[in-house]
Length: 197
Image (cartoon, rainbow, N blue to C red; front, side):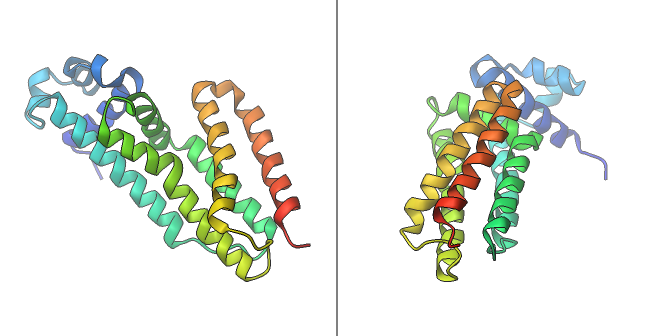
C-alpha cells in the first residue's frame, strides 16, 4: 500500500522534531525532507503547531497500538525463564523500533516545555510499563512462581533500572552492549532473589 503525502509529512516531522526539537524545527526542513515546497505542507497542516499535534497524535497511536498488543497478547509467564524471555524481548523491541526511539527522543527533549508531552513522558517512561509488570507479578505470585510481596512496588523496582539503562542507550548508542549486559544481569539477579526455587 502506497503511503499518502500526509503520512510521509508526519514521518518526516517525527524524524526532524526528534532530531531538532520543536523550537528549532521549521516547516522548510520538513518540506525538504519530503520533497515538497512549504506550501505543500500547508495544504495538509495549517501551521507548525498543527503539524506538531498531528505528529504527537501519530506517536500516541503507534505507542498505544504496540503497548495494547503487548498487553492484550500478554501471556503471564509460567516460569522465571519465561519472565526473562518476555523482558528481554520487550527491551529489544524498545531499543530497536525506530518509531519508539524517535518518540522517546521527542518526549525527553520536550517534557519540560509542554504539558501534553510531560503527561505522555510519564505514561511512556513510568506508568504503562510498571502497570503491566504489576499485573504480571501479581499473577506470578498467585501461581507461586515468585515470592509474595506488593506487586506494584516490585514492578516499579523492576522496571526503573531497566528504563534508566534504555535511556542511557538513547544518549550513547555505543553503550548498548554494556547496557544489555547490565539488564541481563539485573533480570537474573531479580529472578534469583524473588523466584521461588
